[in-house]
Amino acid sequence: MKKVLMLFLALAMLFSFAAAQDVTPGVKAGSKSLNFTFGGLGAFGLNATGPNAPTAGIGGSYFLNSDAAIRVGLQVVSTSRSIPANAPTGLSGTDGTGSSFGLGIGADYLMYMTAGRVRPYWGAGLQFITMSNDYKPPVVGNASQGEDKDDPANGPTGVTFQVAGFLGAEFFIYSELSVSAEYQLNIVSLNSQSDNVQSNGNTSVTTKEPSTTTILGFGSAGATLHIYF
Image (cartoon, rainbow, N blue to C red; front, side, top):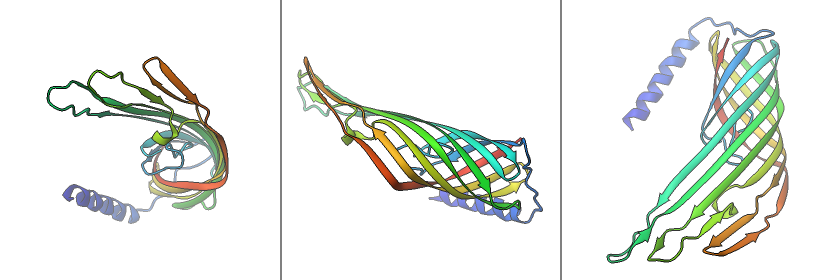
């Protein structure tokens, strides 16, 4: 709790100091920025700076002029966990595992409404996301350990293509450093889920999962740090 409070105090001091400065955004035709997006962006498990993720993403922007930019982004999400077998005394056990992997790429076109220190913007973009998951249950005794691949019950799977709209605002702390907050609306989202494969020993069952199309799906929100050069 103390660490969180100290972080908020540090951010408050930083923004108080920044607000007192006379800052002119260093943005013009040919300007470039590195974009680091942080947490909370969840539509399909990824998210932000192009593809929007519950972790973080990295991307870059290139300004065609002071009011228009092309933005590209990349996000990778990889998780794994161990599930203890908790075998009773006298019996052996094999721990279970669970893992997931996601890769998202995207490209956006952004238009800025003003040229001041606070720059609201809107835009649209295309995103491509691929997700997979794998689950092996814990086993007690000598039973064979099964495997459950790409089960929708264990998380997002398959390939998603979507068209998204954006609305946000960017605040310049210094001429070459800014932060922004953004909302994304998924206008059209096409998802083709991977086949679910469940196996146990020599037995394997494959289940075809449906494809879905979503119009005006729930979007996402997040914050980004921009470094201009």
